[in-house]
Image (cartoon, rainbow, N blue to C red):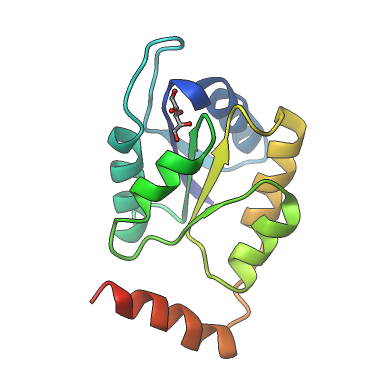
Length: 146
Ligand code: RB5
């Protein structure tokens, strides 16, 4: 798969680890930054390009990480067509694909450890949208965007 990943300083270490994890599994990963550990940056500056790239079809999925995952998911969900799921376990990640057709995964670099984060990422990328009744519900979400 083609994955785009981005983080602020709060998610930097986990971003680097996930990038290596994905590349080792054979995925193509584009790193949108931030590129410097320990330098404070603003999470919307990474949320926006990652969400836009996924919605535009340049990548299959996006992964966004800040300290909690909250700010970066709120920001990215402002992009029309983005369905960003903040997940803290693998069940949430799998269901975000199955029921919500999420196209971007958000994680908290100060919330989940590396091993759990890898499980969450793998569950997200391994999940499939179930369609059926969930199409109607996702369409209703998208209709809110006008
Ligand atoms: C940065 O300190 C922190 O506020 C940010 O990474 C994120 O947790 C915001 O939601």
